[in-house]
Length: 297
Picture 1 (cartoon, rainbow, N blue to C red):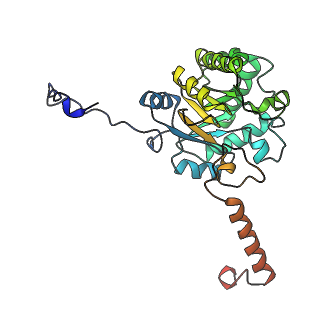
Picture 2: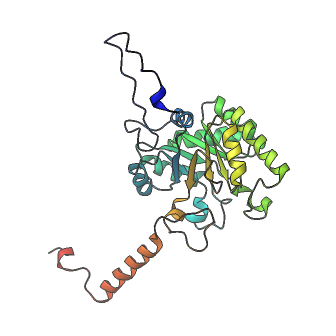
Picture 3: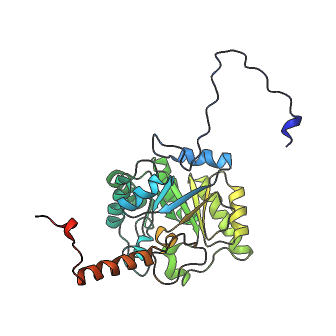
């Protein structure tokens, strides 16, 4: 659009006309209160992209909160990267409540979303509501996340009707690792793509405020994003999503071993911590720590 060809804006009808409100960006913008699901919806309307990270403890969450990250996910990914499990399946509700409460206490601004772990919502919508209420009342989270579209529609609808904001999760759903036989890309082929699109529209129709798309072909994720009014959060789903999320230990190079293809490492904390531990050990062995400045008399 050529702005020079536009007619001049009309003058205000009154000298006392209020000035238009300045648009607050989602990343780093809202500082006087916590980010809400309405802020995410407004960002979608503006076409604003935003970042999301996982967090499992107060100190880490506080750092990300101060950095302006608007949404923090207390993911059951903690099972793999924080609790030492092989996958997310063993993570319990009590563990999720404990970690979520820690993240809430460590933050002032971010919307904290907590995963409902495996076995905490599949039995019935009533079970999902009971455990979602635990996360809201005992931990203080602002929303919950659960896996599935059509298969989780009844649970999502009940939670939303009860006042629990729900983030859906489609594509690669780690809680189904045994059924999937690993962590393959999802949505390849016409039938799988159509099903994922149906799942996405179902999640939106029953009230989900956002949708995570994990390990999905970029073209399909972009199509899903364009077809929804709610924001999509990609992880291994290309750049066409409204937001992007990474597991924080993957992002900073703390996770050991091989990381997924979609991970970009922005630091090498594993090497940094290893170097610090070795330097500490050398000082202890050489009796140079504690030095005089670290000693009481």
